[in-house]
Length: 319
Ligand code: CP
Image 1 (tube, helix red, strand yellow):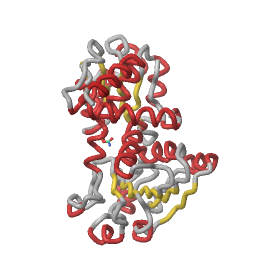
Image 2 (cartoon, protein in one colour):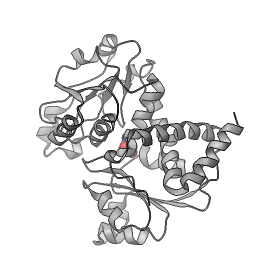
Image 3 (cartoon, rainbow, N blue to C red):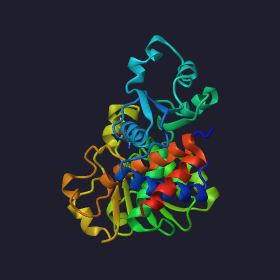
């Protein structure tokens, strides 16, 4: 049984393999999908709001011939509201489905769920903890857009304390050679010490900065994040961080011509709409790649080597 709980669990070979499968999935999706997961059921259990993660997982499952059961506001519309523990819910749901995709407000929830589940659990975001499938699609996007990940200079900007996507992305980037990271954040939401300790252990070069303009001109990837109002301890703390970093035409003018701008989305003012038409704005292409990465993950978790072999053969036949 293969759970997807943390960015830490992926080594470089697995990442390369998943990205190759995601390429095949893009081709498969464009050619009518596949039935390799026919008869399999995915449960989407979301205790926090989501547009991209939930719908792209559902789309991925349907494109592989599987079916979906879901609760999009589990905190209110599942038996959690009656006091049922996460563990009890998971024990029951794992008898209804072949895989559980879980988004939860508490750090570590997916790991707790995996301990009692009879089927694979995929972490679709656990509070301010991790969001490993987002990082997979982020890296897949960088590789597609720039042709490589080794040697790149990558800035992560915004709410780096509560932004789970940047935690997972930092961990996963440590699997690549000679990457240089720039963490640009307001003073009250810096990258956590835990992440820096890990990067130190892995020998990754990183800098903590607060001048976005200086960083923008030297990086290959500018990864923006939303200041997450809902996770700050008070409205006052949120206001200290909000609006400090904004990508507009002035920042675009400073950036390299072949750099890209990414964002896990949703955005809340940190990338102005005037940026969207610039070819370097990669965030909507990034969101689209989520379907292909999640197809690859579901095939890996549920179909195993046989499903992957079928898909590879199909891609070969189709040219
Ligand atoms: N990137 C991301 O996790 O988006 P959603 O919250 O819409 O799923």
